[in-house]
Image (cartoon, rainbow, N blue to C red; front, top):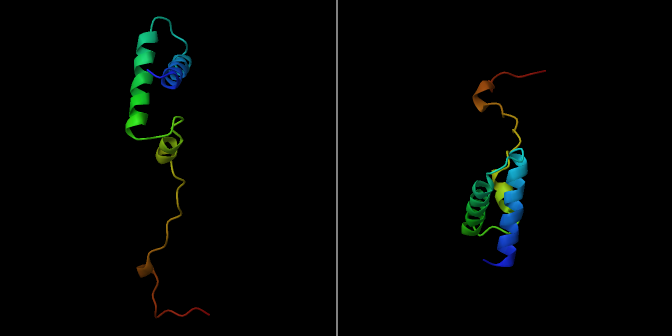
Length: 79
């Protein structure tokens, strides 16, 4: 395992541990999850920080709904 990969997995496992409230005795589970996440990033050819993956799954702001064209009566004149 390359040093960069090992370092990334180590930091991610630590982050998972913190996110879950720092439980004791679950370090193997956190490590396996970090390895699985790293493997997924590598399969998608994402950058090390996974920035483009995060952007892909970011929720998009709601767009205002456009009025339907058929609700307007073209024979009606205003003014």
